Amino acid sequence: MKEKRCKVLNFFVAVIIVLGGTFFMFSYMDNVTVFAKDNITASNEEREENENKGSDNKTEERFPASYGRDIVKRRVSKDGKRIVFLTFDDGPSLKNTPKILDVLDKNSIKGTFFLIGKTVDQGGEYAEIVRRMHKEGHAICSHGYTHSGKNLYPNGVVNVDHLLKEIDDTDNAISKALGFDYKCKMFRFPYGEVTRIYKHDRNINKAIDILGEHGITSIDWNSLTEDAVGNKKSKQQLMNNLKKTSKGKDKIVVLLHDSEDREDTANMIQDIINYFRSQGYSFGAFDI
Image (cartoon, rainbow, N blue to C red):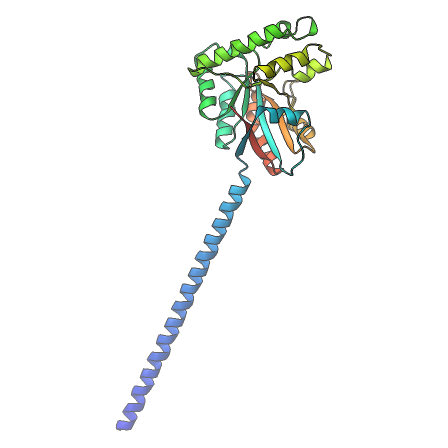
């Protein structure tokens, strides 16, 4: 009888051990599975974060104005890097410039703005936009005071004295808006330096040399949407022009406009950014 009781007791002990071991094993496996899932999730999240960091293509470094001129003049050697600079003419405007600044800020990209001094001199909200540009780290540059070909290019040639006066007047307007002395390091000829060359302007080289003596670099562009050329274009036409004129170039200076009548341009800045990102470009900025 006693022997039978021992056998029964041993049987129950064995059952308890087996059940306990089974429970422990499944608990262990559950923990391993959860741990593995957590690790996989963390790994995926880390990878996605790293990929996003790599694809942000934010403004990574600043370049001297001379670098922009060298790009346009095809004097930059190939180094495998793809860099694009977004430049805007004819602003600031109350309607479109703030929209563009919002998109640039959202994407952590610094733009280059060639301002018309006469517009800046209106003060008020125009001055506020200029202050915002400076605060957010964009390059503020000169596009002349009047943007008038009649004033700047009488008889078809650059009037160098008047050009320098317009640059000074624009600097003064910007300085007044900012509240401190400001000198633009970059200048873009109204209608472009390339137009003066095309028209065989005999004073253009002299003007560029004199600007250099004043520490000012003239810079054009090597890609554009043609948003200010001819008749109004559809968004698709503007994008097609951009793709066509930037094709095969590793270093790009894009001409865009932020004047009051360029709402289509303001509304497609994100698309432009997305396009260049998809092509592997980072966004450069010029020294301010």
